[in-house]
Image (cartoon, rainbow, N blue to C red):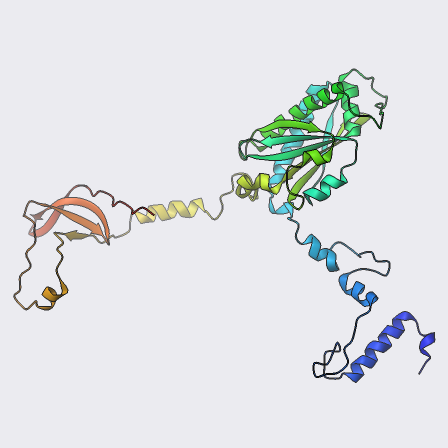
Length: 359
């Protein structure tokens, strides 16, 4: 048998497992419940089971412990109509920002993903402006993040900067009042387009609430809450930047059923053809009606004493109104008569609906 010192790490581990299998034939290899030796995993084996390589880094987001962590994230693809809404937003923003800046503006949709609110807030590159908006009809909030490149580009364009020159960036200073006002005007334009993009699905008004430069002051949801992140790229020839929309899933909850549609106007669980066919066939259905002359209440003792020839007196006259029922449901009121040698009922009016007992 070769010297263990000359074996590689993989060969030594394989030899240990083979020896363990020989010693514990018949058990699982990790221990003997009857009192045998217990196999203890070392750190490398634990990392391997959890999906980490020898350097301690995971081998992918879908392996080991990362799969368990990421499984808690809500996948935006469960809301297919979001893509339709944001695609409509991109087209509308391209037109409205061209009118707003009097420049050639191109808006493109980079990515739609799901993130944790706290993780995203900590990853925002500063300096940036964070516009908090409120969806009035849904009674909740959303967040718009404008990066510094877009801020300086908008300021440069609106104040008459020449084309072909990069926007001047002065880092390390707070944004001026003029810069904040110009960015706020752009935010109003984008929020108006966002409201219009949701209009075919559900009318909603996104109202500008406040503008912040510190992410801590723009907290609109709990740190662990899931949210939809939409990354937009705005290009104005040689200038531009990124604009990101963050909408918590709690904000979208009132229209969740609508966002689950695969296409606009989809009806869940309904088939209009079968509805029409069923409605037409119902008119051809035979319904059994019972004519109730009167109802009386007797004790069980009296009923048990009935004999052949016993009479039950009903409190009804020949001209009194009788009730037609379908099962236990009163349908019509009418009068009894005779037609062609048969007893018949002439319907006078519909029976009053029974009152439901308060819950």
